[in-house]
Figure 1 (cartoon, helix red, strand yellow):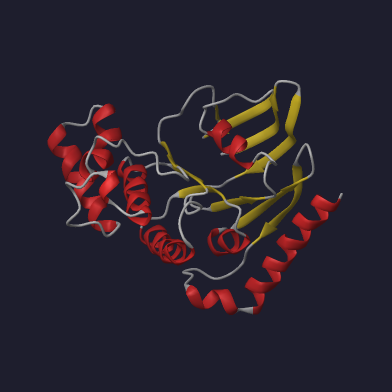
Figure 2 (tube, rainbow, N blue to C red):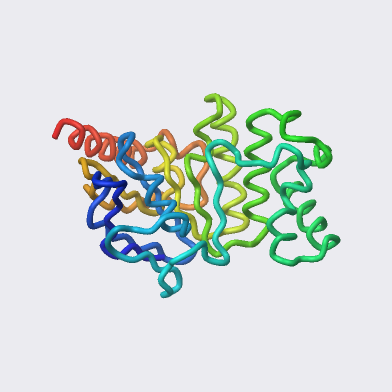
Length: 247
């Protein structure tokens, strides 16, 4: 995936300017920055949901002008169909793409096992906790075997304890089933934990203050949070964001 000179505008307001980013296959790029700096806007441009005012989004060398095949998105507020069961929600994208019902349900059950929701296949979203709803959203995204997974503050609507549990569950799933991932978050810890690189946005309109390589070893678990390298990267990102807000 490549963002080549992206400028995003809403009416007369320029949200971000001249964004250049590259994401190599199998890697995770985290995007952090203050509220309103255009993180989710960039994600929506990659998904083909909106078009940049200037510049180009490319996936596998092809310019993105609509939602590309093989791209899945996990939303902050779950995005589940309230009238569908867990099983039907997970199978939905497969059915829409023409996968026969039996095969779609088999794949859905495989992902339901992966995210730890066995026994809740016939439950509806209103019967689930927030964490379980987000597990369902993650299973739905992974069901289509995406070449690119877009994560838009996926744990932002959860309480702190559930958020931490799901962070490490997601790490486990990603380590067992690697997928190229663009991860937008307000959490610096989350960005360092998941990212191979971190793009720090600041300013209005926003630009890339710095692109930071995260050389923490894989696989990562909770013990990495206390390492000197983790804390140093966290401090670097924090300082960049604070500097941008003061400026």
